[in-house]
Length: 171
Image (cartoon, rainbow, N blue to C red; front, side, top):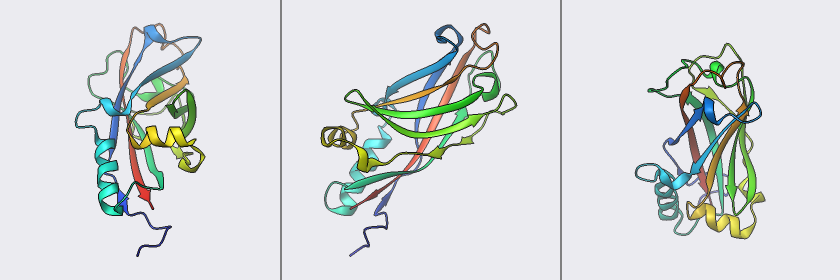
């Protein structure tokens, strides 16, 4: 039997692609969001399936072991993350109207295209029971929010952003 502190399943990178558009910047803030299950092949659901197979049951706890942000190919009007954000950028899960911090990083004006590693804040033990069920069912949104870099709103830019998670599951 495995120790309760040892993960029984790890994910490969689970990436979600978001957009930061100059035209969508509101009050100096860049925000985008989408459901975790919308990516091709639904890699988060695959992680949950693999976890259930390894555990013989649904996981009792899930950790985000790493989190990073990258400016993706095909972006227009910007070539660095520092041209999109300047300041603390946050990633959150929103489930049933509840917000759960996942991670944060400070993006400097001099930041390159990334990836930029985030400090992880996620604690799955804080989820309400109904939210835990939605998490296991891949039924939640990923939000990316941060202060717009100086001039971003006026640039007419379209930034393709990739948020990449690694997960671990526990009994």
